Length: 345
Image (cartoon, rainbow, N blue to C red; front, side, top):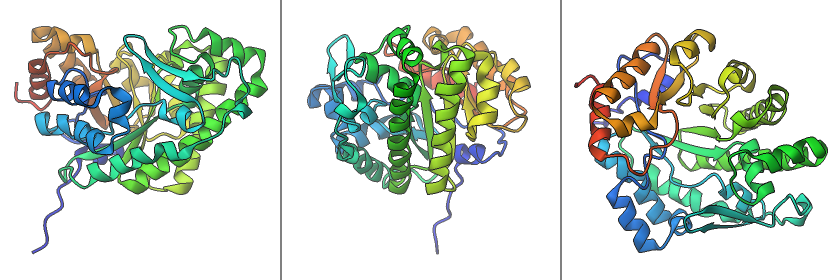
């Protein structure tokens, strides 16, 4: 007798269905708050060593699924693997974060020699995870959106204001457009190959989208993400795509209408009541508990989580945080959140 295929609630929601209990996963659910992750990272020697070891990266991807039973597993990798594949060197400075060289603030794009083979370990990770995920769990891949990746490529590191990239975009928009176009092309292929290897949906992370003026947002966030969506759908017509333009605020509705994504991720600064009113009527929404409410726990956590669930109850909804889970998050609070969302508390 053939095995009965279990439904995938998260994938169902991305297809526009409403379900009684919102499926859930948490951004950065595979990571530093888990003791099993910290032990494996210490063994492997560092973050990039984990990312490029497909066996280890698959194990990290699976850890929160085994521990918590989330409805979605997010591929363990990093957004900066795309700049690395475009030819920049990538490393992490202890306590300071990622570094890329040569900086495109000082060098032309054509100084880079693309090395797409650097992405091969990611595809190997996808295949390993896809072979062991429970049948009801949706496998999510991801990539950084062009604006966010460009800010790192130009400055050679992260920055809160993204001033160097913003100045560059105003000073030489033609050269900046070439950088964006290169990221778009690489990202379409990267996400298509993730899907071909076994992921079932993908998320576009635009972590620094909130730093742009409305006109620049249209040009450097909406248009490039629309190009990725169109290019990916040409390769993978059934692709399910979540857009997460962090900090977009009032520009979220335009992003939702114009990019073609299937679902919108809300950061923690967005009122879900407003989002429910302003976003396209039946568009799935993901979010948007404040990660600090999860750390607080107790009544604060319960009230905040229920507010999100109630505000988005009449549309397809994936429960998530408004950004990544913090390293000092108590594991017991994650267990409590799952019980709240799934109606056990």
